[in-house]
Image (cartoon, rainbow, N blue to C red; front, side):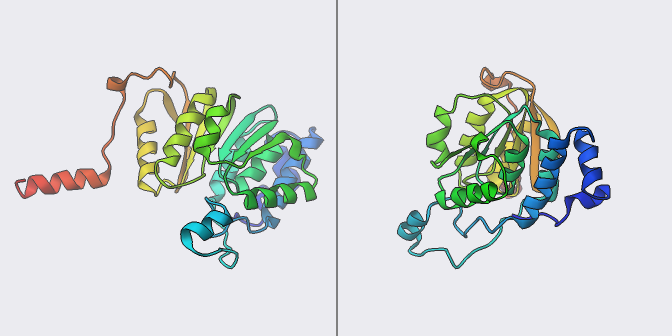
Length: 257
């Protein structure tokens, strides 16, 4: 993941950026925004080709190691900026996956939970944050599969990000547990809408009365929790058909099947 080198440029420098977001009198917060800009710009390569599993699993399942396949998984600039605008100093936040979003959460939130089975990535992130003076005590890293870890997470959160294991049904599992832990008016962010199962989840949230659209980028969407998700009634829920299903049904009708 990457972001443009200077987020502050659009506001005419770091001082203006800090004042725009947090008020010129808050020195600590001004430094925090500067830290975000600098940390994102200098962030090391966190991900390997198989970022959702450990190196040992990569060997056993894929028959290879991925040390020579280093690459950044790009997060949209607009998503990082949305998180920067949304996360407040008193917020508790949670994400599945680890990346540039972890930097934003770690700097701005009061407490952040990061869940990923990839210990190599989290060790690199923790080391990078510590080397740059970020207090990692407020960052709780759980190096487990999210399907195993999330049921035991009992905290309540203002912001959640689903960007962990992308294979079906993990994004749905992540959303299910995180949505239940979100406080009223909390924000749920889904990344990688281009994957069909994540796009379909986004479509459901757009139509469900318990959620209200908050923001959207090319590959991500944010929804605000406005209803009682736990006690949803099945026959009142909107169920959207995917474009592939619609096309398949249309083709069957056209050929008389």
